[in-house]
Image (cartoon, rainbow, N blue to C red):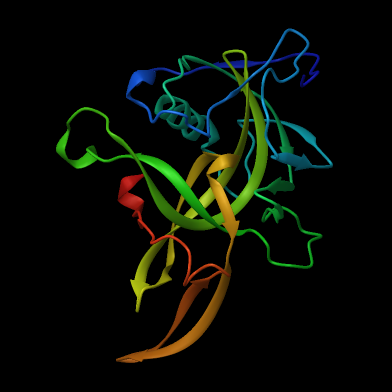
Length: 233
């Protein structure tokens, strides 16, 4: 339970809800049902927030990003959740344990390592450009975690992350970041798959530029990327 003395709610207008029947089956990034005492019901997950936890609201600014209500609405609509009224209270954390490793956020100013760059697998609409029925598919994205947070909606607890997703292209089958192109998004912590490392290398194309490559231990032996673009989000 968030335990706030006063819990504010925000009314979200122009909500378009996607029916849950159209979503991928066995979606690992669904909400966790909670009972009257606020405990998870029938949930077995290794996702954990690593403190200290802080009580905030969705109208606060995080790393210069102040559109969290709109991003939350878009996230819940993609999950088929009714979200005309969104609770404003959240609990934030600067670290989380996901998929066997501790991941930091960019708001963790005391961190001595750069462990906030991640690979994500996010559910997007395959038919977005043809205005057809919603057809979910998972694509790979890369970005950085701004902050981890927990939110409650429709008697479910949602472990989430505010991320900035980078525009990425493939260079010799290695993903490389298009510098300066980032898009904020709310994702479920189950969508965060692993830590990645950014490696900068000089490349000469007319003028001297710097190419930032993305690498991780399973780059050459893992499954082939289904690379998404910012236009998919």
